Image 1 (cartoon, rainbow, N blue to C red):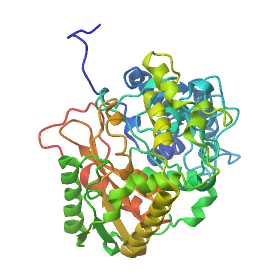
Image 2: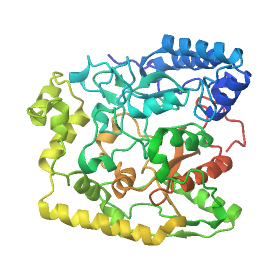
Image 3: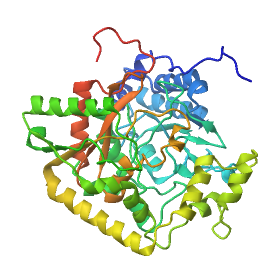
Length: 466
């Protein structure tokens, strides 16, 4: 069954077509100016997906033919000079730009299982709200991508589509993102207070694309944001917290990640001429407990076991499923079964819930008092760089580093900081108070300029590259 000749982890080959290395903003301009044909752009992305997807298993269903047809229609109109102004730039800033969405989001004609075997035959008959907004802006959906079972685990693996591999190292897992965007048309969708915690946002290779994408995806919610407001980085107050203070539930932050964060602090102090204050927040030590209490606060929420069964009146028995899993008979993944069991055995008492909910409110107040309307916080994205496959089973609570800001309701921008010694991306999260996304996005642009941002997977770095 095993062979020493089996290939080890590898990265995907680098993207070489110049169109694949353009920002979305740049592509849209080139399509309008006719420097590039829309069909050419769409085909370049389809070719790239077909070239690498057998390695990483990211795309699980596509609409390539429909996308190419849409692209040809756009080219026909633009080649004629768009005499009827069918594609106004003001309302369609992403004309012809391709995008993908998590399979948990509905795209008409594509599956919408969220990795749940019980939903394997479900095909979307309409678009999720966020997909509608992107289409209205001229963007073209290409495909849907993999997720964990019911989107409740931080490894994209399920029994419908299998496991997704990291593009930089196929032996590692992949990650996700969030923001102030409608979840309508996503399964599972949140109800009650959880609508404030289950949020959606753009994931882009280039920081330049984040703000225009967020403006489109947020729809009417954009009015709550200040995305048109110019940000003076030198007028901001910066803070840095190097870890959660030593929670016994989470692993220690990797030294490389700490060093990357220190490099960011040094850059900000040197280039912006400001002082970054190193602070500690004792309550962060209880991030998972706070997250768990806040997630279970609303009495009208479905349990995870109910979601697993896709039938509220007949929830899955996770203990029975575990026995079935041991014999290869369960339709569910081990992480999903484990989450179901955890839900059963570690439900907090009402008194414990009250204590941690109160702690959440106090922690939020502490952050509000510290950050104010001009404050930016640097905090680790995760205790470790991209873990190996299945490793999250041994460190299930490490997600609390991001989960805590979901329940606090703070906007976060995840920023890549180049590759570490293991060949996978390093990074940190940039945090601000609600509706200050424009500040975190501006900081992301600055850090991309300083540290290079997204790295083309498989690129051979020359000596001296940083």
